[in-house]
Image (cartoon, rainbow, N blue to C red; front, side, top):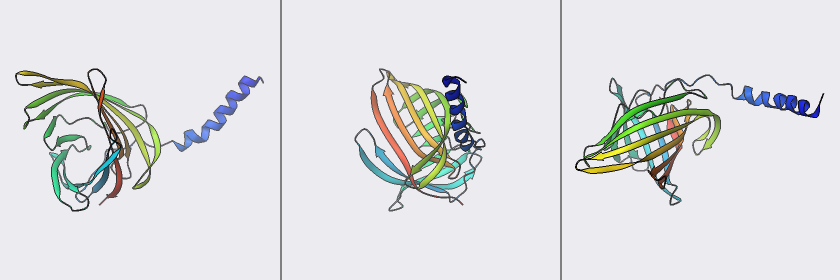
Amino acid sequence: MTTRNYLAILGLILAAPCALADDHAPAAAPAPAVGDSWTYQYTDVWKGAKGNLNRMEVTGVDAAGVHVDIKRAASGALLTKQLFSAEMNPIDRGAMHFAPSFARYAFPLEPGKEWTTDATGDNPKSGKHWRYRIKGKVLNWEKITVAAGEFDALKVEVQALYHGEEPNSPGGSGQLTETLWFAPAVNNFVKLDYRDTDWNGRIFNRDSWELTAFVRK
């Protein structure tokens, strides 16, 4: 047996336990219930500074989707009401409305799965309108540790090219990227990294959210 063949076989033997360790069933769509909550620490990565600690609380689940209150974790003060699809894809994010939902997920999730969708985003208060071309891909299962604990999570990358249109003036365009880790154990992501670039590829927003606590009913 040549040295090259021996090393190749040895590599397969050593790799086998890792492959078995990553042998997960596809992640099914979450089933949020009233009373579920997720608390996230926001960080402005661009400035290297931690921001607010906010809690998402499920207040209703109906044909329209999953209704969520966003509150200050410390005081319980209501900041905004949001709406997600049954799969926890954003529909209403405060002043921003997506139609259809912003396809952050396409369940069931498993490594290698990809999806492409189109959506519009409107901000009625500012009179701004965007068109999105969204591409998502599941990368792999990872074991990730955040403030809330250690979780088996699927790493997902979502890229969205957008073009903005405003009445009587051209809008902005660019690309946003979300890298997130979805953990079936919590019915949501445990970490999300966000990056936004203009049409020249210059980064002007970098943010992250990390799970610090959660409640499942």
